Length: 312
Image (tube, rainbow, N blue to C red):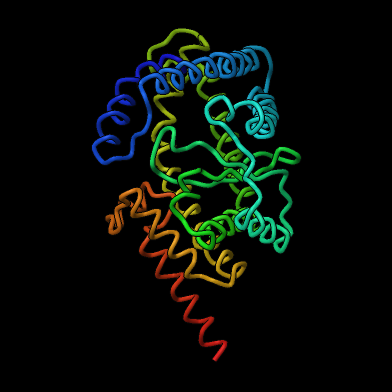
């Protein structure tokens, strides 16, 4: 894992300091990039290393190892989701409580009206690295919070920010987060079962000319054989994600009563990120986790027209 991170550094440097800079997105200094890379490597070693060692130990020690490994990974995933906002994410960005004012009041009113509990609303110094904007919900239980990029607040109206957050609340209230976790866990369970078949079946090793059943050879075989399966699962996951985006857009339109506020926010986000407005349908089907922005805006405008007809 650490080796793959190191191998990817040249591509990361080119992407950040050449491509992103060419289009005016990059605000990352060389020092910040180095610090981010070092922190990422440290986390990979401190977290990824022990987790990988635990999985290897399980597969090398017990029967039905894939079930035990799945249980261990599930617990670790939940713990990391709980701790990420308070221990991991602050290593890379500063989280400052959103000051009192119209935006905070509107966000709190929205969360209250949708019966969505939060422990805090924070502003992230995203402008330290990029001109792009974002907003997301993170954490579980008492660590659940709203995170707003400072670039989002600077570039968008209060109505647009509230609409964007209503979209994020929609993901939670519609069960998309739970479904996403369930899909991820299901994928992990299938992957671990396939791993067990690669590491435990002697015929698998013989098919590739390997004597005995050395575990580390089984891991290599698994890496080669599972890659095509992962490629097939990717489009399915993306399709589900795109459906969820449309549903969350509709939820935001209903929650705010202003579908065009979200449409306006999406327009501004697409302009600021130079989004491709007309991607090829095949590329969308294979890779896009979000529908093309023009399709999302069209859907929101249709909702607005329906609302207008209802009030006439």
